[in-house]
Image 1: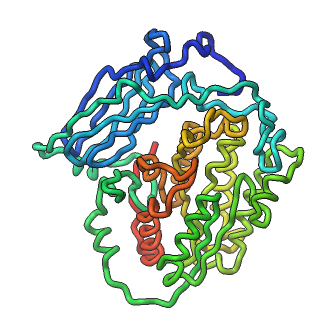
Image 2: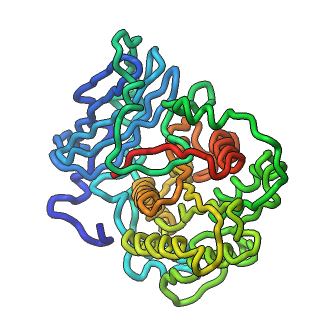
Image 3: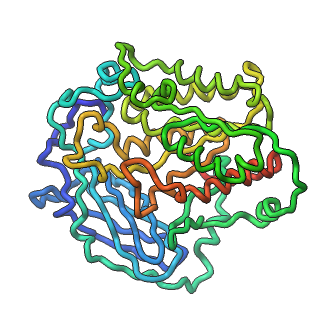
Length: 430
């Protein structure tokens, strides 16, 4: 939705209120099945709503912690559904972040130009008064407890592995699971043949190939953690990184990167050329080398969605031609972005520069990027569900402690160790 547009009847008075909205229905199933709750929204005055456009975050917390998937039925009700495997008592934590599609709005057309050279740090007040970020807990869920009973039937989670996909993504792991005792546990274990292949003893081989992490500060933290792990210390010849915001950070100097200004609009060729230059390095010619790529959190803050879609499509064209045009046989893995915790921002949490840095936009951009890379045949390391379900959240607004990504690091290590015999996991996509 474009900035400045407003549907008839969608004024501020028609925003949903988490204080007056309520849980209208609960469908709690035995362990290994999907359980769900339905939220009926109301305005602050208690008027029942019959339109959608809200963004709710819902967590089921108890023996395990899970971020529910929330469906907007576009009639004022929202369905929060999650697969609960562990039996026991669960609480519900639900937060209303945005209403009336305010979390999805695109920036104004000149947004990038009025920022610095990275399209950021627009002057405070440029957009006028802002109060779109609500962050209000659902009052009706505050003392709500429900019990998940043991599964006494033969159906349940094991049936999921038999589902056939019309379209699937080559993923390094399933990516979906829950946190239990601060350990990330996937819902499904690898199939027997894949487990056998992964655990098969292998003759030690000389170190070969290189790893190149291309991404923002989350990528840099991922890189720094991997430097201390067997992947970089034992398996690969070398590990490298490229620090990127919207564009590469000049000399990795953040102060300089923030201070540089120009009058240009967004120039996608800068990003595409940066990735291309990485693949031109001699060490990235080898099929044993690996580029882990992410264009993540900075793009929803600065670009409209269609511009980002075009960027991703052009990046994919370049990557598909990397062997022919660049002589690079390096494997490419797309690493998804992460969930943010905007509530950790200091109140009033509605600064101009952060206006479009919203969880709904991040999820939209991330979903398109993952889908596009999957359809293009690239393998994916999906870390978004890991972070979305991590109840302690971030240490600031965007960064997590390194241990949150331990399982992702281990899977990447397996990917490199097994090499061409690695069997990716098929994940269904639309």
